[in-house]
Length: 526
Ligand SMILES: *[C@@H]1O[C@H](CO)[C@@H](O)[C@H](O)[C@H]1NC(C)=O
Ligand SMILES: *[C@@H]1O[C@H](CO)[C@@H](O)[C@H](O)[C@H]1NC(C)=O
Ligand SMILES: *[C@@H]1O[C@H](CO)[C@@H](O)[C@H](O)[C@H]1NC(C)=O
Ligand SMILES: *[C@@H]1O[C@H](CO)[C@@H](O)[C@H](O)[C@H]1NC(C)=O
Image (tube, rainbow, N blue to C red; front, side):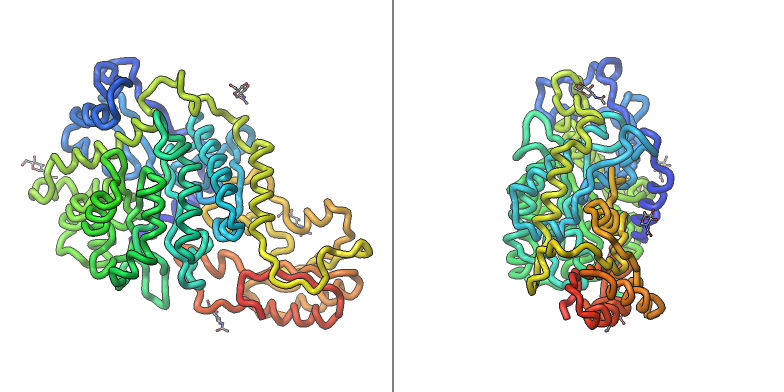
């Protein structure tokens, strides 16, 4: 359970190409006569009129992320799950062409690096670009309008495999970052008449563990005091959902104090809707397969029907997965849920789509005019560069930087020296360019002696001699290494923060050569 994320991402990588979105047809019956197509009415009234036409089976079949729509009403299928962690990214809802138009999106640095820029204005601008590219892709059927980003669980333990997806550990910093990010993505603060895209604040709440020596996120129970919830775990969500008014939230795999998050009325109703004012024009999705996990992993209910009913009633409007479509039909027959509850859930989803202009004529919607020329603009490239430069942190400089003009030959060593997609980390998209440190250094006219020397996972020293030989004939040595997704990732926590493999042994040998040495650290400094 809950393991579909990676398999789906992989299949998207291989298969992605066909456009899969269309807009509902408000120009023809039966929709043309329905209030959902009347732009003079408010979004909740419009969505309610549409949902009134759904039968119970149609309501249930549309509670999942791969929403089939209702063909007899002219309502097309819709995919609620698109990703945009640091640029529009591979996901079930995103389709990059193999080449040419819509074959890429601008790739910004991972949030952990952008967060280190401490530049909220920059984040707002970056997010505005990501939202614009998302809209350009959507207009041509290459992406949805709803993005499962940002990840703002505080990064309290550096061994968490998904800490890289967050801006850091400090709640004030997280709150400011995420406020600016969401306002940028959505196209303003609670924008009217249209959202640019809808952002999803995830994962509510207390999620910061993947697989800790066999303790899996899918069944982990986070025991958190009310004080810690209110002072540490929830402030970024308050900034994201109450203040920046993100249009969606995602409940997490784990339980909080014994209740699986996606079935937790305290989190999803009392705090989110009643206290933070998350209205009926906004919706909650489960993390993918988290509703199934209520029954299958947490063993929280005696039957799958009860798990589906608990989640729906607590306020999980979209099941990312297919547990709702499988078990809600019998849950309904067993009177565990009501038709009114189903209508509430579907109305929230479609109110959000009304606010995205989904049912309105393209004319008069500036977002609908975006096209391929809005992707990878010179401004986007400039911001990606600025984010990378501002986010880098120089820990120590003994005078090696800036490199002396006498440096002509550089020994470029390490498992990151020729990194391309490795640099994009997880939830990446198809980048328009991938320039490795090796390619970049060569473009700057240096004479480069490139030797990998070692890899991130090996303990073999076979490559050391060649690396040391390159260092001896060079004027300076640059070591590019550290760790990557093989060490920390979704589903993969670290056990310690030491340098993986034998990289430190290699660095020690390079240091002994006595040339100026530059080396990065996303791991413990020695
Ligand atoms: C629910 O009950 C109705 C009426 O008894 C029946 O026709 C239908 O097949 C049942 N559906 C499920 C999924 O059990
Ligand atoms: C994109 O739209 C602009 C403005 O409407 C138009 O001038 C341009 O030709 C379009 N570009 C592409 C690549 O379709
Ligand atoms: C560097 O990586 C690129 C892209 O993967 C590859 O084409 C190239 O051969 C590599 N260069 C060296 C010297 O290994
Ligand atoms: C650190 O943890 C990794 C697994 O994350 C393990 O392979 C390695 O042996 C550990 N190193 C030390 C020094 O404990």
